[in-house]
Length: 267
Image (cartoon, rainbow, N blue to C red; front, side):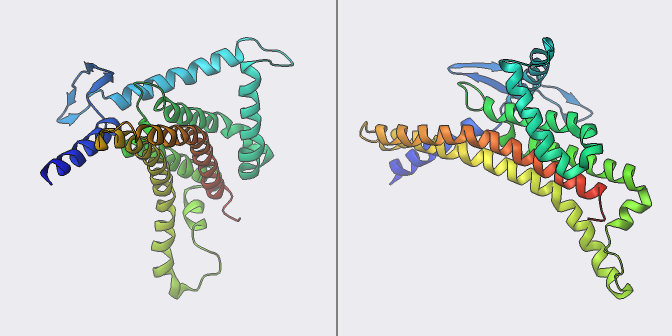
């Protein structure tokens, strides 16, 4: 019983080792320590997930540079693929939520959100990579940025007083105001919370499942489990690639939807 409990604990440690953030870069057997920085008592240390976000940001910039380096009437190759994604985001996300007139104003923000989350999602699927979006601190920050965009766009379009007034349904009986005002503000706050938890849970769950399948080989200590574990892990790996794209799309879509609702409160 003690040996079985120890094996289960080692299996759990194996999974935690790969999904939690570290102050080291784990490149196989090589562990590279990262700088520890403390500012006014606040831990500002560089971690593995932060490095992955730097890499995602670099890939985002390189994508922009490469796709716009050769401008022409008919893009080709990589630029053509990026243009197809941009047109999709514009026509299926920006225009339905912002309208034809305002869609172009929010396209840079939506494109940045989509590609940054996409690269963070996919970096966790390459060898020695980590999934920054499997960290709730990262998804909470992304949701906070979306929330700031919601408030900023809503106040800019409707005015400060008009925006908060628009949260309350029109022609509402005065007796219901003490109940509806807290509920409407709570509903406003649940939008970024939903963005945060949805992205975090989906990206974390997929990696836990993959690691669990692989961990079965070490837990049962038999090669007969290996073919099944590897087959299921490979299937989940391919599914995770799809989920990486899907979650980037869903986060971008919901962000545009929430910002659009704050702008067009009459809807």
